[in-house]
Picture 1 (cartoon, rainbow, N blue to C red):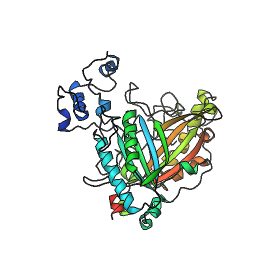
Picture 2 (picture 1 turned 180 degrees about the vertical axis):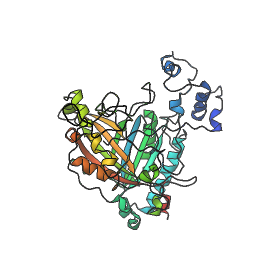
Picture 3 (picture 1 turned 90 degrees about the horizontal axis):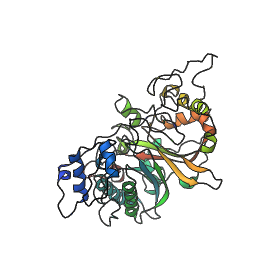
Picture 4 (picture 1 turned 120 degrees about the vertical axis):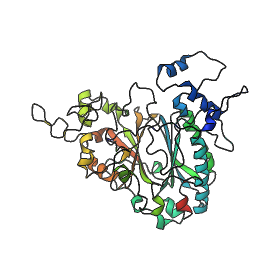
Length: 428
């Protein structure tokens, strides 16, 4: 859990076809999307909230902006990297089936890409759609695809495997379950509606057919848009504001830190990124025994507003040298926020885009809950690895968390119109 902030929200997009009026015979999914534009409802306003309390009616209720918000599938980068955090997420890894190779992988990515394009536009998935999201809008759905280290040997593409995809080193905090780590293929799904996210998950799983099998699947969540009266960085299950120092797209070096350059190596990774995925268990029973002050000292920030213990607001630069009346550092030397600062790690930075998870109570009677940590960088050896090594050497938070699974995936750039994700690799 590194101290970075949340990407800003994407502006909703519409098409002329979405503004058609509904016929008296009923409202199609696409036509229903258009009804939101005429209402002027804004997420989180009294008008939008009041709609949920209204009495049942045969008249179709217009979608709020939560349902109409749409991310675009085609583009320079894949969706689900710089988009705002969504309320619901699924991450799933697949292994190619025995006998499946490059040809089968190409056909699978072609199917997946077409399904992702359709679903992100608010359309049915195609053949055999389950109708789970029949009456829903796109709800900021994003679907992102990546390749694991093992994929390249399975498809005879070892010479195209990036050096940045070499396995991550072992860390002292690792307690990794190999069955829930890595994989040939990786898919990230996010949406602001649980049914829309589930619908996408089922469509991707059905598209897989006999080409691959699921290796592992994890489900997560974040705060729903509109649940708080003012924009803020997300909170994690420890109650801490989590992600204050994320790189911002407006920063001049953002692309350099997060995306592979257009003339980078290998060529098929141009405008792509590398995703590190870690299931981090939070030992909440132990954490919650700490006083509020002790929790703040572990993190180095105030729990109420995320401001550094050295003072100011959440965005105020941390004063690492400030001391109290007794001469003690106000931000403890082993505080998580101090250790993870880029200026304490040779400039190492990554874009965090996590989900929280809660998978019930384990056999010891404690919650199986924590963070599905997902971070993006142009090179994990210059992003995640140096920061995690530093954390390994003395992070105060380490005794309250446990890394239980891990994966590293090469996520190619976005698909142009008429292309599928990974086409430059699989057909190059």
